[in-house]
Every structure is written in structure tokens, then in C-alpha cells.
Amino acid sequence: MKTTSRLLLTGLVTTLLTQCGDKELSPNEKMSQATFIKAMESYETAPVTAPAPTGDALANPTKQQDKPVSGTENAVLTDAPNVPPPITRDHPTKVTIKLEVVELVKRMADGVDYTFWTFGGSVPGKFIRIRQNDEVEFHLMNRPDSKMPHNIDLHAVTGPGGGAAASFTAPGHASVFSFKALNPGLYVYHCATAPVGMHVANGMYGLILIEPIGGLPKVDKEFYVFQSEFYTKGPHGEAGLQPFSMEKALTETPDYVVFNGSVGAMAGDNAVQAAVGEKVRLFVGNGGPNLVSSFHVIGEIFDNVYLEGGAKPAQHQVQTTMIPAGGSAIVEFGLEVPGTYILVDHSIFRAFNKGAVGMIKVSGPENKLVYSGKQDDRIYQMEGSTIQSIAQASTQQAPAANKEERIARGKMLYTSICMACHQPEGQGIPKAFPPVAKSDYLNADPKRAIATVLHGLQGKVTVNGETYESIMPQLGLNDEQVANALTYVYNNWGNNGTEVLPAMVKEVRATVPPPAAAPGAH
Image (cartoon, rainbow, N blue to C red; front, side):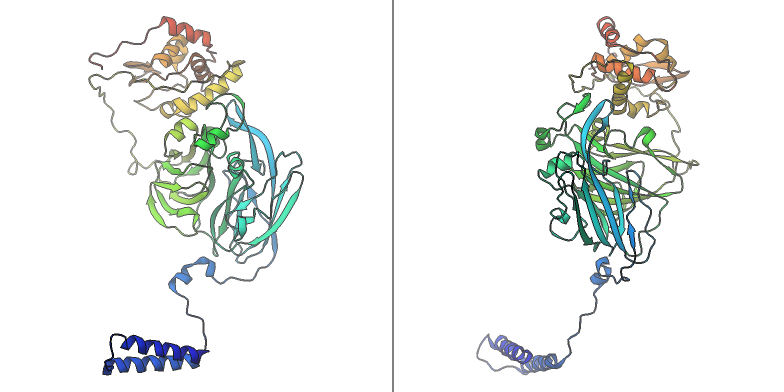
């Protein structure tokens, strides 16, 4: 066979060397021909050997040599924002993973419920952590009270459908399939039962980390963050059990864009904790089903970004990283100064108006060289400044049935509209936005507080002994919403517990005129 190949190629080179005419071959051309023929004769007798590994092959973690598979274990699974501990073993093993499909009603936002379809009873599904070259036995159980069949497509699986066909499971049944974790990285998993988009939109997704041989670099804290959007029949904030809207899903107009399954799941009392001097790693997924995430942490720069969930950092000193629907990223950063750091989708209306807000509360000593805080504050009032109006979407929400329900609805309004200025615990921002916690201004006169929310506020105001001079916009809220928001504030942070009723708001709206525009205003 080799002799035949040599003869054919010898003929070919002769043809190529003489194809430009009938002229005799030059001495150099004859030498080239002879050299080629000699090389082919060597090829005929040379032993066949594998090529030496190239730099690319050596860099590819899937090509690394590893120890034999030994032992067995059950995978550690955690709910967001928690992450299983790093894998310390130096060899692959046989791992059993068990996930139960659960359909259940849970909180979407305060006063708003939704029927979620879940892996393991939580949204997102359990965080799975295994090691490269592990041999995995995967069990998927679908509860008898489920109304739908489900399956799982793990982007980490090499094979048709990522395991979807092998795991198709009717209610009251359990399925088992196996795979080898060939490729390290951070991967999304999701249900892939038709209609796929509906199953994903209802909460069926999560992350699986396949650690590379040798593991990831050591950090102090690791957290699980998963963005997704939800489409409800009622508008954002409408109370009660909200069904899924296929129409909104098809037009890609979500009512909620959230981290870890619901509004506030990583904010306020649910914020994750860290300390100055620690290095933090976030495993971030995006379930979609439609939107790309512009993931950002306000006040931090990502030291390392593992783009698209890869096993090696590909970028450094990154402000915002794009995460596609059905994709992931790993971000790492150090903490230099204390405070509350806000996680957002920087498609910013999704954050402050639809729920994509999380928090990392960092404790520890200040470092004025790195960040001074406010050093000076002076009044600057442009000629013609005036109160602006912020329109809000109207809702057909039924009135709150009692004070407790009013407070719950008010919390959601405060979080989405008021928190950016007046802060998560109502503490305000010194010299800029007055506190609503233990506020003598609010507690002294509820009607004045109502007028402020209705009409906005301009000019100097004294709150708790401090003078503020900024402009509060008109928020465009209806009577029910104003009542709910103020009732929430009055019943938190050391305030006097007043319940503001829609009738009180209606009265103030009819009797208290908006403030006069400043001279020269347009």
C-alpha cells in the first residue's frame, strides 16, 4: 500500500514539476524530485508513531492523563446561593446523582405566587459539583402528583440530547442513565420536554460544575447565582396566584427578571455575607428562556472571568460580562472595602423594576485610600430645576384585604421603586436622600407624607435633625399603591405603625395641590 502511494506521489510531483512545458528539468528541479522520492522511500519503511502532543493538545484539559476510576460516592447537592464544597480527591470516582422533579406553588414576589416546575423543589435547581472523568449514574424521579412528564438535558453530557431522551420520565416514574464527565467547566442543565420553552420558563434549570483535574484555584467564598425571567398573565406586582403567559413568552416581554427564582431572593435579609480581604467566586447561570444577561456587580471589577463557563479564566479586570440564555460564567473578585455590593443585570430596568437585584454585604475595616466615601457636599441648584414625573404601569389589583397584606404589597413597591434612594433598611444616603427609618418627618404627619409621595418634593427639608435639599420625583402611583408603600414604611425600621388607607390618599390628592414650580422652570 505504501509502495503504491509512493509511486503515485512520485508521478504527481514529476507532473507538477514539468506541467509548465516540455522543457528539461533544471538541476535544482531534478534535485527536488530526487529528495522527494528519497523521503517517500523512508516513509515506506518508517514505523508508525503517534505525533507528539502539540501545545493545543497539552492545554486542552480533556486530554490530560488521569488516575483510574475508583470508589463511589453520592453527589453533594445544594440550594442557591450555597455551593457544595470543592472536591479534594485526586482521582475520578463513580458518582450517583439523584434529582426529584417537584411541581409546587411558591412565592414570586411579596403577595404574588406562581406554580413552579422544579428540580429538587427549588428554583434554580440544585447545584451539582463533580470532577472531570467521574463516571456518573443519574437518577431522575418525577413525583406522582406531577401533572407533566419531565426530563433533563445536561449541557455537560456528551451524547444526543444531553440525556434528555434517556431521562424522559412520566409522573410517578423514575429514570436512570449514565455518562462520563469528560469536559471540565460550568454547565447549565434544564428540562427539554416539549414545549421546551414552557418547561424552562416555569423554573426547570440549574448548574452543574465539572471541576478540572487539580481543581479550581482556592477562594474564600463561593456563591450560586442564577438569572431567569418569568411571564405572568397579570402585570408585574399583581397579587395572587399568577399563571404562565405563553403570549408574553413568545413576545419576550417578561414581568419578572430575577436572581435565584424570586424577587428579593438575594437582597435584604437574604443577602450573602463576606468580609474585607476575602476573595469571592460567583457561579452565574442564565436560564433565559429568552434574554441575555449583562451581569455586573456595582462597585467591583471582576479579577477573572471564565467566559461561557469555561475551565480557565479568559479575561481579567472586567466590568460587565455577557451571559447568554442557556449559558454561564464564573467570576472572581477580591473585596477591599466594606459595604453593600449590588448584583444586577445591567440591562438596568430589569434590575430595579423587574427584580434582578442581589446583594453581597461585606464587613470589615474601611480603607480610605481605596475608597474615601463622601468628602464634601455643597448645594448646587440649576436654574429651572423642577420636580420630574415617573410614570408607573397601572394595575387592576384588588384592594388589600388587611394591614398585613398591605404591608406585604408595600414591601414589593418599596424594593422596586424606593430602595435605590432610601436604601434597603431605610437609612437613606447622607446629604442626598433622607432616611425613612425612625423618621420624625414621616411620623409627625401622615398626610404630609402622602402628599410627598403623590406630588414629589422640592426644596429644603429637615429629617432627624439633618437638612436635605434634593428633588423627589412624582412616582405616578395610584391611591392603593401609595397606601401600601407608606404602610410598609410606617411599619418598619422603628416607625410608628400607622396604616395608610386608600381613602386617606384620595382625600389628600383632592385637597393638597402639587408644589409650585420653581422660578424659571420649563
